[in-house]
Every structure is written in C-alpha cells, then in structure tokens.
Length: 278
Image (cartoon, rainbow, N blue to C red; front, side, top):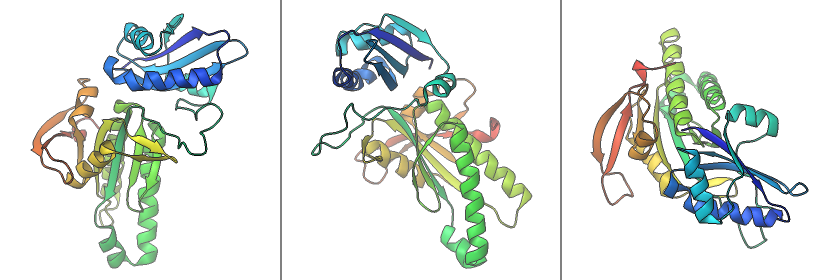
C-alpha cells in the first residue's frame, strides 16, 4: 500500500491531546484499511503529522473524521526511508509524558509478525561440538539480521536458533523472509557439509505490546505457522496473503490446518520464494 503523511493545524492542542487522538485512530484503523505507523507533534507551532499505510487519501480523511474529527489540512504520499532519514523513526513513540505508574504502555497497532526457526540446532551442537556449532550459529544470526535490517524489521526476540520479528509493512515482512531463505540457500551451496535450514511463519494483526514485548493471538498464530512449515519453507496466514496481492508474489494454497491453541482450522499459504528470490 502507499505510504502517506498528513498534516494537521492544531493550535492550542497539547501533547496529551494528540496522544489521545492517536489512540482513537488506532482503535478504528482496521475499519478503513489503514496501518498507522507513527506521529509527530510540534506543540509550539501547533502542527501534527501522521505517517501511515493506507489504500487512498480518502481513507485517511475518513479515519480521522470518525475517530476524533481532526481533518488533515494536507495529505502527501511519501517515501518512508526518506522520512526516517530526516525525522529519525517510523515507529510509534511512547505516550506523551510517559505511562502512568500503574498503566503499562500498550500498543495495539497493526503489525506483520515473523518467526524463524533453525532446524536441528541441538543435533548440530552434538554433531559438530560446541566451538564449530557456535560458529555456524553466528553465521545464521548474521545472515538473518542483515535481511531483517535491510527490510526494516524490528527484532523482538532472539531465541538462540531463530528470531521473532515485527514489521509495519506486510510486503517488507515477506521480502525479508524471501531474502533469508535465499541467503541460506546460497550458503548451503557454498558449504554443503554445514547446511543451515530454516522454517519461517508469518501472520498479521494487532498484537499487544507491553515492556517492548508482543503478546496475543497474532503472535501465537505466527509461531504455530512457523512450527507447521518445513525447513526451507515460508508459510503465511490468510491476512498476510490478502495484504500482499502484488503479482510479483507467488503463492500456493496449503489448505486449512488445525493449529495448537486454535479452535478452528486456519487457512495457510506457501510463499514460493524460489521463483522470486532477490
């Protein structure tokens, strides 16, 4: 989806007022197909800016109108990398003035989540010994982190033999997963005696964030889909599939699976990354 930045003239408003308005936007963003990324506020000049993924400029206006009535004075399509280079971030800030002592920071913004898992890490240590296995794990970590950084992923947790990563863009998440598998495929061709095989699962939704950790059914679904995938495979949820409908992505319907912890079968799709690896 396009990335938009809007500008509001809000003379007399405070940082607290803007933070409250942003929370109202977050509650309604999915209704309009919008993914709010962050906002800035210049209290002295009375100007506020919002950065978001959205299908159209009209959807941005309709979201703000229903959430709190503050209609943007201007909306522009922007390049998020340029925004980040000038303003320093494209992720949600902490609430104005900090969270109250008995009120944890909660962020329910829409995210695409990715879990990766290295096959047979325990067996690798047993077969290679601690020193050689550690070197292989370092290669695994370096290649994965390079792809995560290149695609603007936020590393939530390193599990030792895998990663839990959050993305504000679903397409960035899939592109990152493809890049990871492509890197390990190249590594395996060069070092067939020390292959690194990784399974990857993705889901999308509104996880709950507290103390820089993510919780909720979206997190659980991504982890279960990862566990369901085979080494060298990328599996995604239906929501991720619907978010990334660009013809450049090649998918295969894997049918519906009953995953641990879920009452109903879940549609799963495979990303045929071999046909489109970059």
